[in-house]
Structures are given as C-alpha cells and as structure tokens.
Length: 106
Image 1 (spheres, helix red, strand yellow):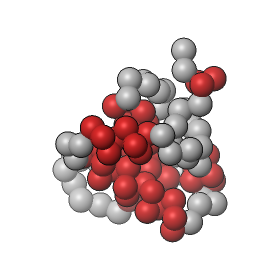
Image 2 (cartoon, rainbow, N blue to C red; image 1 turned 45 degrees about the vertical axis):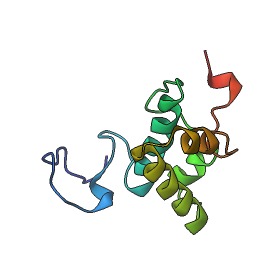
Image 3 (cartoon, rainbow, N blue to C red; image 1 turned 180 degrees about the horizontal axis):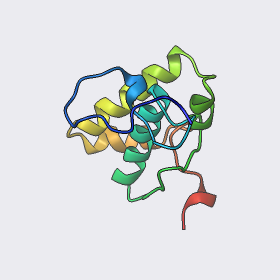
Image 4 (cartoon, one colour; image 1 turned 120 degrees about the vertical axis):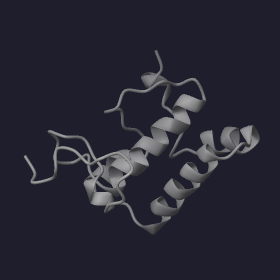
C-alpha cells in the first residue's frame, strides 16, 4: 500500500501523482489519467470499459515505459474528448493504440 492520501477534496488542485485508485500501487499519476482518457474515448464510441481494462499502450503507460510520444497522444485524446467534433473523435478512435480490441467487446 502506498502513502498516498485516501481522499482529495473535489476541485483541489494538486500534483498528478495524487490522482489514482486507492488500494493499488500502479494506477496512479499520469498513467491513470491517460488510461481514463483512453477509456473515456472508448465510451464515447459505445464501448463501455471496466476501470481496470487496458489495451494498446495503456499497459506500458502503467508500467512507466512510454515516452513523450504517448504523452502527446494522451493529451490529444483528452482535448478531442473535451471538444465537440464527432469526426475528430471517430478518426482518433481508429488509432491502433486506442482502438478497443475485438476480444474485449462483449
């Protein structure tokens, strides 16, 4: 178990390392933020995923083995999900690092 706080008041600005899943050691910080953005993109395409589902490079992100290119992709996912451009969402969803594998679709 980590020494991370068990709660962070809603709206409290803080370090990305404070964002995560309590009772886990790996689902914290930028990797958890990017993993949530990827799952949000999937949900916008009617692919409701479980909080622990990983595919593409999300597993590498949780392991800390991605680099600046994946950070840029994660930023693009977050910006596109926050926007109002269905065409951009559809285009992004087809990226091989973001597309939900067929075996995960039930």
